[in-house]
Length: 299
Image (cartoon, rainbow, N blue to C red; front, top):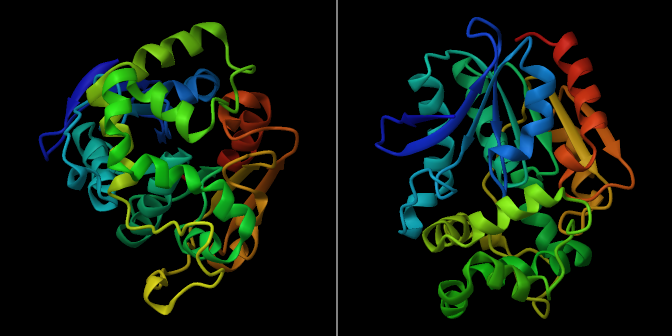
């Protein structure tokens, strides 16, 4: 791991493994994890790809600005391109899960226009246009997204100051963490340590607080108001691998409905009997899908 300073002044802790002259893969982790989300994929791919995985801003030892406005999507997307610039990488495949996947959608859409991103891999992260509508119209998704309202409520900040991020997670998910019986003990211990850092806890929560997405309460109408409709988003035309674990409690498979209209060159891999954290819950399936996709597409 090394420290990389971006043009913005943000500093990221970054794993940079594999041949420097090989095609570059930039991995983006989600909430509430770290670069270690991708530990199995980096180990599998770093003999033939340059694998770059940062602890994103707000996480672990990376810069943790406390202002909510420091976490708007444009800044998080900008971090990825600035990271590539700082490492001398012109073109790269973007790979993201959860919040990292949400940012990866944005990086891919921008990268297809500037020619820097030839392909993308997205794991259990909804397309921004589809998700904004789904939380209004789909009861399953609305119910599954209420934790976001808890994360955004500053009335819970005292809980975070007293107990770290774990206190907020316990409240939002009613004491149940989806993968608590599937994670390796050493990984769980490392996460609990990370969650105890109060500045990181607020940095992580600020990803939700800065998002323009509105999550309606359960008693609001199940129809999207005109003023809440997301702006038009162009189709993603670069090759994209979408991996979706079907037992995700937060993001049900309805997120896949109509996705082929928004991603014109899509390979879809459904993973049954697997929860949200598919990169490490089902690493062999993810690795195999990535092998096939990366081998047949241009870097």
